[in-house]
Image 1 (cartoon, rainbow, N blue to C red):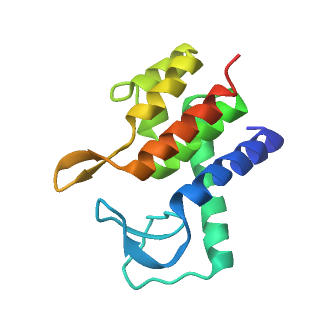
Image 2 (cartoon, rainbow, N blue to C red):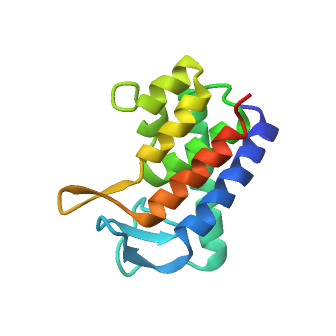
Length: 156
């Protein structure tokens, strides 16, 4: 992936993630009960963990960069706003939203080049499983609407 393209996608995707996730320096349980820290990082997090603000920014940059690479690998050549929107969604809920053709209509639409259709599919990914039940969370609903809006700026 071109370094400039990745830098633009990273700037846009992190700009989406930061206000949506908020900053919490001490580990906490997110609504589904997953230990999280900083800007929603879950990898290897244990309750009781603490990170400085610079550590949190570095963690987000590293993890979002990895997600952008993963999305770009499974869906190469996406327009930058589409890549950024799907990378933010994948950072939040996993790469299946963009990459799993069997479980994601959005992924199938991306593969087919139907970017507008894929962007609109993002709205369906606003649920978290709480006590075994999928529940639409208001914060996720707003985040997915913003993901869709940014995504659509990359559709010609």
